[in-house]
Image 1 (cartoon, rainbow, N blue to C red):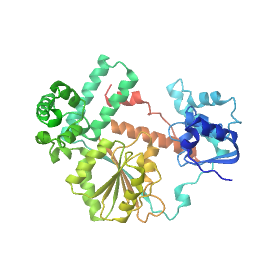
Image 2 (tube, rainbow, N blue to C red):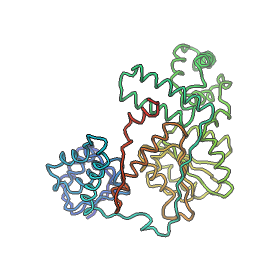
Image 3 (cartoon, one colour):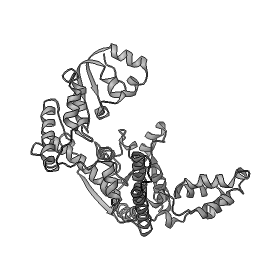
Image 4 (tube, helix red, strand yellow):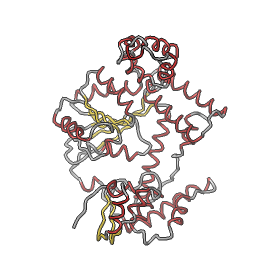
Length: 432
């Protein structure tokens, strides 16, 4: 007898969890096993209680962030072997080197130790070994200079945040670090993700204008201004398109297209249209996709869009439409939605508008077109705003990929430095 189910089905309610704990299986196979990388998660704790004589984990990304996550998978496969030793394993692979001069040797010893532990239990097959007829994939990192307006806004933001840190105006250090990080990432991607164009004076004018609308005649002007102040430039622009009294406050197409990355897109798109290439464009931010969508309409490019809010019943229709219609030039997707097993082999160019801290999310996005059925060589391009925090994020992602190479390499691993610390990355970006 076979049972095929989902992680959520087993862990969602107490009755289902209880039933699966009582069943005794000969084999349990866990696909997408990297979802079990955190041994402290409820999912991990519920699933490890399932009784089975044999466990098999299937994943294309066994190591995503650090060695502890890799050990979590090993402990999950053989919980009896590690019974009572989990804390010891955690300490072994999470301890930090006390002296900087010995750090390289210390990290190398941890990597070698992890390789020896994993080797008897891992069977690894690379895509190039299994799918030998698959066309080649080419990777490129495109550094994009900020536009003049964008650079001015970014520099002012860095100066303001640096001053706040120096003066100690941030109450919650962890929370403020994440918030500042997000502001810098938004400014690096497109100036309209923050509020710079719509000044407080302009918002006052907009509040007076919108009160002429039937839906806002009895509204309080000060409350309207307060609501407008928390919105980004693009959100305010979108609002202006909804009300006739605000039409005059809409942003011009030149402002919409004024970003360093969009200038690069203008060059790439003309080239790709000439050679009949088709493009998957990924972004982590749905609002960034909103701006890209308006950019596509300004440039008269045919496109489709799929993100986390797209109803499940419509997703396959969009995928089929893109694969069947060669005149649709670009498919816009959110990066996480691109990792759900969808097949878009009609495209041969993957454009990562903004990269993820976890490079394996980007890799899953790439594989939406670099898979069985692809007949053309695939080109993957990562857009990185030059001189911004995105360069630090790229370094973090490359270090994680390097750790995976060190673990799986047959020759000697090279020096591994952990640039993944959020505070250190933010400190560097602010010039502190």
